[in-house]
Image (cartoon, rainbow, N blue to C red; front, side, top):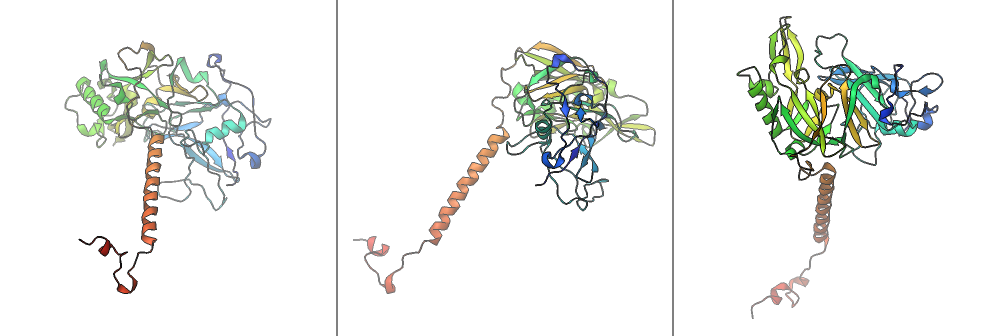
Length: 423
């Protein structure tokens, strides 16, 4: 594979660093040789980059995801790249399609060095951010602020934005303290959920159900996704506590929109939802409160008279996913060096975080006994494939071996017929 240039446009901002985060802040120097390094950074002519000043470099909202512009290839093709902490592949559209406006034109540059983004499923591959850290020596930390909560994607000419800070934390993007939860599995930013509440009502489920088969923080997932039993319990609790009676089930299963007269807010009719995460002090937890503005999401208006909304929570067959529906309320810090994910109140929309709470009445490990981790499952799959291949080889050998034949049709003492005759 050849080396390509990945230029990251920065909007510079005179921010200040929060010393309590304890990160390495040594100056960052641009890699001059794109051919040797495979990466260069769009920065000031002197070559010094301050990654803590990357403000408002994202566009998007929870309905469409959050993206940043990147210049790819030696001829500088600008594309919108989705920021996805739950995916490993760095992928771009490379052909025309009715739903795609911009795509990478391979005719302008025939070779492409595909790298990977934020998560790492296999030690043999290098995600994009790992490459940035290795080549620029920035701290192994990035943070996200997504500001699209309560904004209708279809009616906003200039989509809501946010910030991706690579290399540190920007204190102007959040308020108050940062609450950290341990990362259990780095490749998916897997965390531990202790309990959920709807309004003031505890769902009272076994905490292992919240973490079956994993609970992850994923900016590329638009909704809050819950395991089947948890989703059913949340919907039932919402229907019991909501001020709306006889609500259509189609709203909760995603097949119908709910519409109100223009200017009438439905958010007062729905309860808050709270997610409790285990703190770094494992005997404690902290609470992320999700207001209705985050999970009852505007999507369109009809004839200028009705505002329509969708349910920002969905069932999941492969674990709990803290997606953009939740992340929009918070400034989220992915501290890969200390293997933790931090949450703080976002300066653009949120003020709904509290703690610490004692993790009493909760198992010391809410992840034990859940489904096998995917790496283990892959080992089992490959093991079974190896056994099948071995059996197939043995069968082929047996088929190839020459069969014993009778000489000239004569029955001899070597034949099975004579050896097994009845005496």
